[in-house]
Image 1: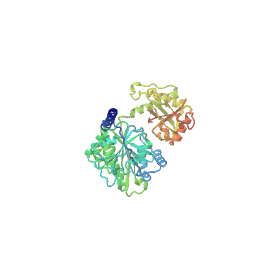
Image 2: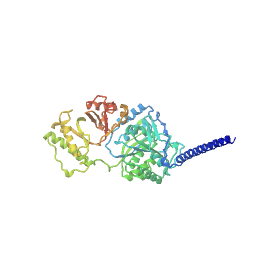
Image 3: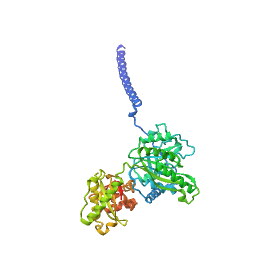
Image 4: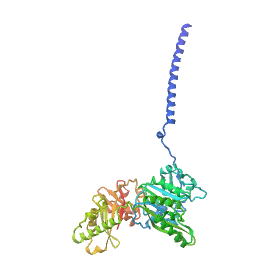
Amino acid sequence: MQVLWRKNTRGVATMRKKLKKRIKKEHIIVFIIIIILALIVFAPRSLKIPSKEKIVREPVVAGTWYPGNKEELKSTVNKYYENSERLNISSIKALIVPHAGYVYSGQVAANGFNQLNKNYKKVFIIATNHAQGAYVNGISIPNATHYKTPLGEVKVSEIAPELLKQELFVNVPQAHTTHVIEIELPFLQQKLRDFEIIPLVTGSLNLEQIKQAADALSKYIDEDSLIVISSDLSHYHPYEDAVKLDTTCIKNIESMNFEESTKCEACGIYAILILMDIAKRNEWKAKIIDYKNSGDVTGDKSRVVGYSSIVFYSEKEELLTKEEQKFLLNLARETVESYVKNKKKPKVDETKLTPAMKKVQGCFVTLNKNNDLRGCIGHILPQEELYKCIIDNAVNAAVNDHRFNPVTEDELNDIEIEISVLTVPQRLEFSSGDDLKNKLRPNIDGIVLKSGFHQSTYLPQVWEQIPNKESFLSNLCMKGGMAIDCWKDKSTEVYTYQAFVFD
């Protein structure tokens, strides 16, 4: 019995040892799990992966204030742009545009947006609250991450939630249920690419709050920024009275008379005053592009609403001054006349050349006769000083454009000259022909197509003759000796550039 008992004792002892080891092992596992959980729970915020829910602000006036069908909307906006005259205004910083239904103010709005001649990455859209029952004490910013129209979604910049950290900026959801921001988006979507918006809806602001708003926004405004003020002018006056009121308002805005502008009967007056504060700090200028009222559209002049488009621009960043433009145009004309008559290029007094004229840039010289093209040649890439580029290509346009006979001495009095100074072309990536068309910006981008040894370009001005994107690209393919649909081939390289044009 003793032997049996000892054997059992050894067995129990062995089991106890195994049990202790197992318990110890399980304690270690539990301890490790606790440590891991602690690291996850108490990890620094910088180690956490942020996850922001996508919140899309759906369109609320598509199909009523503007077309709800994508293709119809594109066609409508493009038609407005085609009917719009582009002025030679560079360094545009801001716009005031109307926000009525497109049948009333669409053309006036397009006339403003069509002046944009560069791409902007950030667009501050500022309007004044139009939502009944919504009280905005300050400036409201939505919690949306995207705004949607039939043309697609536009991302809301991360600047928006950053601004909400400041006392002046609040979130009043109901303030963002009207047309005032949305109505401007299709114009921007057809004009710009890869841009984000900062939608802002003001309440009634005092002068101190206007200054605070200008202070806050100025910190984020840079070369890639555009400010869009969404506002109509006077409301429901007889036609003649409205014109007088609106004309006075516009003159005060153009002259940067802040005090008198506070008297404007504009529904977005607080947004306008914020812009004027920012503009005065930066010495921007203002220029009216268009003015009409609802009486001009409907014929009913008893109670009208005023619409205007006004651009704000910086003269400090003018690529070439008016004097420089005049000098270079005279140089181009002198070159054409000298070469046609004597086969000689003119000598240039280099003491009269400014740094801008001696900067290495691409350029094109275009000759027109009786409004018809007579010659156009240039350098797409920068290869020589601007004044030399103009001399060389004035000669080329006059006698070396193989599409035309050389200009003769008898024609010289009828020749009109246009000069385009080009930015450096940038590669445009695209996944399909439709994707390429969507990314093109008529009246802004010059296009270069390159396939193998073939290459061709159209200046931005050519959009005025060929506004249809598909026709534009197909004609450009044929111009370069490529297949008519070469632009649909993903192996074709596409480059875009912009032009500063003067004549």
